[in-house]
Image 1 (cartoon, rainbow, N blue to C red):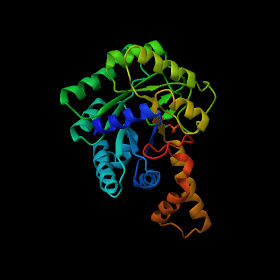
Image 2: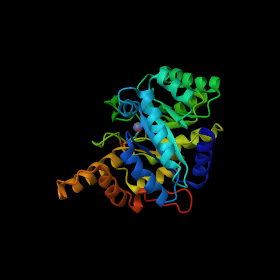
Image 3: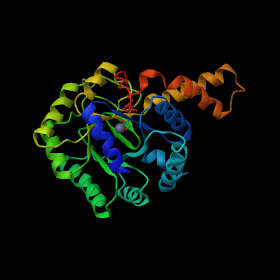
Image 4: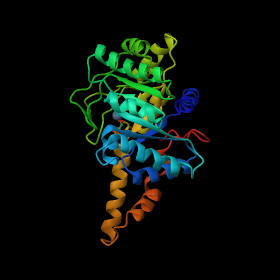
Length: 297
Ligand code: G3H
Ligand code: ZN
């Protein structure tokens, strides 16, 4: 639930680690992620976007959430780590309401970052109020600033940095539990250099929030490809959710491709998953939050 996940973020803020939030759309990558996290004794946050839910549910996103929720729960029981589900880049209020009613996710991201400020505040606030009315045990993530690239149904041509003072106003007015900020990362495969990566801006945003008595955990989207030293700096400044999608999709596809290229009769999916478990989750991928802090995330 959300309160349990909130404890993980409290711990993350105190100790300076980040929880990797990884996107899935089907069980294959989920299997590897759980095994990888368990090997590092780290809690795991999986995420489903609207498109992934629709895919997993054979065109019905609510069925997709139910199916993946049951799958995640069942397999997570085999492990001794906390496994949480976030609903990533959500835009549809009706679907968000169903997510709360089903009580499956621990957190939900409302993404209205492509809207003008006032509209972003209004939509994000609506989701926070929905949660409060229902008394749902779920954290709400909202985004301020714009990240370039394609993520699910949302495509941004332009990128804007998050303004620290606006961030304070945004958190104050929306009451969101987590804030996704734009500090130079980009979504997807084509990582350009449109915006310079600015860990210093993450620090300013964190400071501005703290000056106003707000201890809101910050979220970094588009984290695939961010260099370890840069990420390390981000983690020191209140970033404690690190969204990574492309990296794992790429690794899984590459592993499966290598396996099948070695021997064209190698077409049994479980063999791909087994190969994936051993090659995909190397020691540098994890930021374990239980025994060791590995900064090379
Ligand atoms: O919400 C998902 C992340 O922002 C994914 O970004 O695919 O660039 O790692 P990425
Ligand atoms: Zn994202």
